[in-house]
Each structure stands twice: as C-alpha cells, then as structure tokens.
Image 1 (spheres, rainbow, N blue to C red):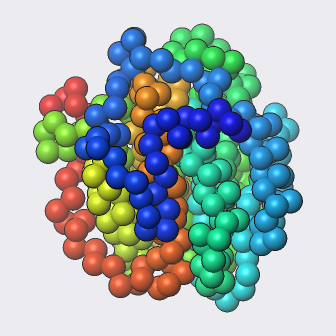
Image 2: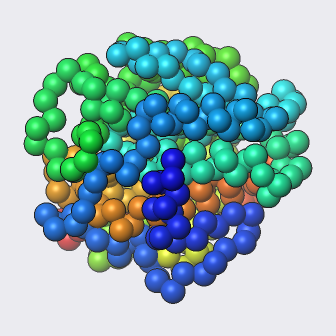
Length: 347
C-alpha cells in the first residue's frame, strides 16, 4: 500500500479531526490538470483488489473495534468486503459505499485511509456514539478490468484498465430496483436489509470538465434523493448530510462544490435506497476518473492526493456530525443557492 501513501504525501496533507496543514494552492482539485493526451494516468499506482483485501485484513488484525465481513461475490467470484464498527446497535449508523463504478477508484483509496484512521487515537470516543459501515470496491471486477468485453480504447497506462461496468457490462448504479447482478444483490440483501442504517454516502467520480458559475471547475458535486416517492423527512435529512459535506469541503480553500444534475430514476442508488429503506442518502461525485475511453472524463494524476484527501475529509466530517448529533442541526438553505454544474464544453 506504500504507493498510495506516497501519492498522498506528495500531493497534500490529510485533514482529520479538524486539524489541517493549509495548502497554498487555491481550488487545487478544481484547477488540477485535465488529461488532454499529455498528463500521466497510470493505474499501477492504484490499489489492486488483492492489495485492498490484504490491507483490510491487516487493519482488522490491528483494530479491536473493526470487523470484516464478506457479504457476497462478484460475477467473477471475488469476495465483496464490508468493514464494520458497531459498538451499540442503538447508535445511528452511517454507510459509505465506493466504486460501484470500477473506474472511479480514488474514493476507495480515501476510504482505505479513513479505515486506518479509525484505528487511531484521533477518533477516540467517536465510535462510541455512531456505527460505521464501509463498503470499499463494490465492483471489483470492473476495477481490475476483468470483464467480458474489450477495453482496448481506454486511456490509462499501467498494469490494468478500469471500467465503469461490472463483468457482464452492467452499470451497477442502475440495478437498484431489479437487483439482477450479484454485486447489487449482496449490497441489498446483506447490508441494506440486514443493518439498521440511517445515512448513506454513495461516492463516485464524474467527468473532469464540470463547472459552476460559467467557468469555475468543481472538485466535486453533491445531490440528495430527487425522486418524488421519497419521504420528505428523508430528503431533509439527506440535505442536512449534504450541508456537513459542503461546509467541510468548501472551507478548505482548495475544494469547490457544485450541485449535481441528477435524475429521479429509482434504479439509481441515491433514489432507490432512500425509497426502499428510508435511508438518508447523499451522492458525492468527485472530479475526474481513473480510466475511461473519453478524454474529458480522465484527470491527470497530479490531483490524486487532493481527491483522496477530499474523500477522507468527507467521511471524517460526516462521521463526527452523526456521532455528536450536529447533523440534525444543519441549515439546508444553502441548497437553494448552490450552483448546478454543467459541462465546460457546453458553456
């Protein structure tokens, strides 16, 4: 895992527990390099599936409060792991899901750092008041490029390609009604239906060219459930969770958050899970992908550290807000003024 830690240390300081090392670069994520055919995008610096598994098992052996559970298998037979910190079933529970799309991996790298962080003294007492579930790398087959269709036109170099889809070519984030794929079945049957979950953040990556206010590149975008079938109280709680994230990231000096343009289809996790389980859900789309056939979707890896840091800050701040109850006091009026992002190419 040293290659991931090296990327972090070279690119930016981690911000945890309200302590940060200020960066002199304003909007570093937003202004990070597009691919443009010139920037380096190498998948060999990203954690492989086996490295992720080995890391999680190592952390479980070190951390008294951590438990690792296999909730199912992918199409190609890879175990899907859930990291659990459950101190009291009566506590509120938050679930973090990464890599439904296999080519959106920096959120997974951030989640792994977050898991390590939960085993340190920096979260002393926090886990007594909140239960945490982390599902890193739901789509391991796509993350490893082990799929039943060609990836010859993908851009990144390295030891593998990463693709949005699972091995059958299915978008897992459009399978939350029918639940046909084994990955989504495992998530629903062995996580969402098994545990009493109050909040969920679904972490993704989007194109590298998204802007607000005409020309300001975003470091990411957020959105609550937008289907009309969601209970209004669930929507409100989702907006409060979004307020925690917005206030945390936009206060860093390098983060720049917009409102995601999302539909109302309940096949999407953000919508379907909110309707089916009354879980407050938030989508967070980080800027740029780790691999793609479209150049406008891929971001040069000089921004990796900031995007990983953005993930860690998001997970840490929401964990603390749920633990101390401050999430319930959040002002959601910012959503009314939050600019909706567009593609820079269409401006």
